[in-house]
Image (tube, rainbow, N blue to C red; front, top):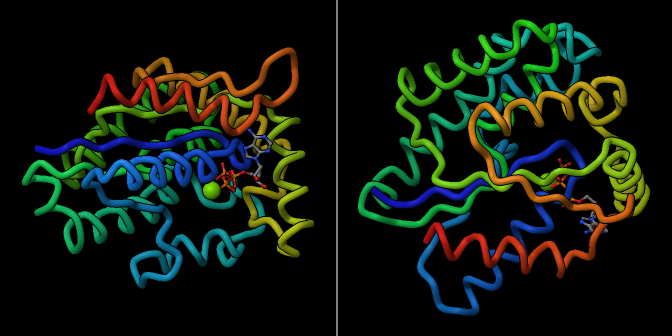
Length: 220
Ligand SMILES: Nc1ncnc2c1ncn2[C@@H]1O[C@H](COP(=O)(O)OP(=O)(O)OP(=O)(O)O)[C@@H](O)[C@H]1O
Ligand SMILES: [Mg+2]
């Protein structure tokens, strides 16, 4: 089996920024690896999750329950694994992923009351890894960023790219619950927490990158 490295965190926490930077460094070093970015918005396997994020089943995230919404995202990963990277990974290949099964733990557990979240994590683990047969990550870098900081980064990005957030990104109360769930999931699944702020402000992209790069050496 190969290795699977995942970047996770709430919306706007800097996953894609760090993912790109690490991939570029590995590429410059001449390492053999492949990239995965979820959701795969341009693939047909993401149709149900696109309908959900666009609000076709309701404008609030809670309009689709945690279990139902999780299946939409899991189908997209099932298609990707079985069509694209199974052979490479099973032959020992290294996969780098911007989000994965871990995103259901962050974004869907948040719809459940506190006391029901662990049961959901256990179901997710069984559903995605055992029943669907998706590989378990070898390392999950959890970008820990306070909600206010992440929301600030999201809004700035929306301004800069002239885009509007989806039903998850535009709901700050929901993002707050996602942050709670990310912390709980990080403990439950044993993710590697990256504290992205220092004294209340965001660390530089380069500083965070160095920490992740050094941690990666222990996994590869
Ligand atoms: N360390 C940092 N310092 C300042 N700005 C940052 C830092 N990391 C990321 N950003 C900026 O914050 C915004 C969100 O970052 P990014 O898109 O990487 O987050 P993300 O977690 O991938 O978001 P999403 O969940 O929406 O995919 C971007 O505009 C990015 O340039
Ligand atoms: Mg991103």
